[in-house]
Length: 368
Ligand code: MRU
Image (cartoon, rainbow, N blue to C red; front, side, top):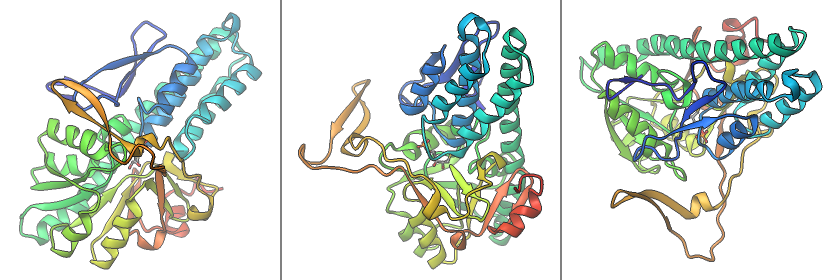
């Protein structure tokens, strides 16, 4: 995507070098900083510390992590057992986004198709790059399919502004290009539809206020940052036409894990008859789990993320403490929205209802 006229992605391989570069998302929107990843350990750290975040990007970073493990393997031999151990370490970096396991396993399988050494390194690199390109294309397709939903609302409103609420950041920063939840918005905007986005700030790490607002602003899309608790009020007062969110893992039965607070938005949308869409590439479907609430692992992070808030003042990025210093805090990073609250999924292959039959019809090749 264009940032101040410069084509940018959140991750790329440096030409001619065995180095991966990423945008360090911890400093956005106040500073645009790039970070080098040179080892598998660097990628694990980047995923854990949320230098990179968002399910498709976590997957892509994991895939490149396997590549970096391969280039740093003893004698560049990429022994199978060595690579398997490295892959397990990468997969353990964050638990909720299924894209991580999906991408790492896929690159590992590609590695085993080559005997060892340089051929194996090349296979791993090519597969990681393939994943990155596929995810970009998937998001483009999600944009085209989701655009139809926005266009329909715009027609019904006689061309008046379509107000879309989103939670967290499921934009290009999280997904290589276009984003998942934001792809239909960018497509509608490009095609001249009048769109406005309500961006939930998304405590504790404020991905909505920091990242979604930054992205939309750079693209020229109208948006307003709101507190996480404002959505219900806006819905009651006809100020939201649709909700589009992303997801970190969705069961093939239709339950959606996404950033904490998504469930409450889905409840409010249901109560107010507002369509609630979830945009995702097939890499975010979990083809094994059947009960999202019982089975999807929900990451609990450092409570300091709740206790402190980061922002900019006097040109510097600072953290400030919010609650009493002695008060304990808890940091649940995701929640699960049951399928019954979801209107439909927007995928790279089209739109489907949130149930095993309809998902299976779109993805017969993926069902186990
Ligand atoms: O903790 P994060 O920032 O990695 O969480 C991921 C998210 O931004 C969201 O949950 C998002 O909606 C899904 S990722 C496209």
